[in-house]
Length: 104
Image (cartoon, rainbow, N blue to C red; front, side, top):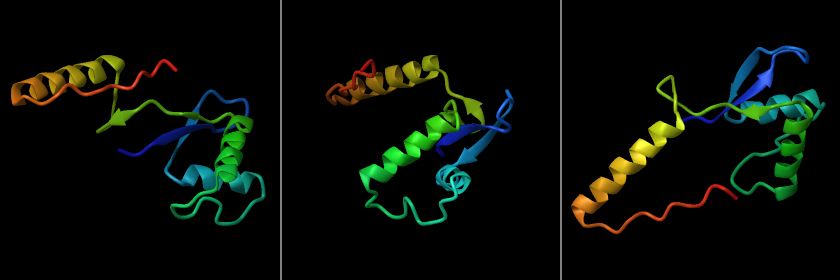
């Protein structure tokens, strides 16, 4: 599944443009006049991650809702999949999965 980001198509627009993968970082850096390999490879400096996040905020970007095969994934769909997975684990005699608390 690809992670998507939403970017305003114009500063005053309510319409959004969807960018995928590293294209978002490249677009943000280009808007700032930075034309370099900023987050290339696996060893990305934390300061560069923070800089890209600051640019996200500056330019009003936000994560798009999660989609799977073109369908928006709802909290209810995720809860149902977790329920089914837990039921299957019980059937197989496997331990219950530890789910991280996402409230923090």
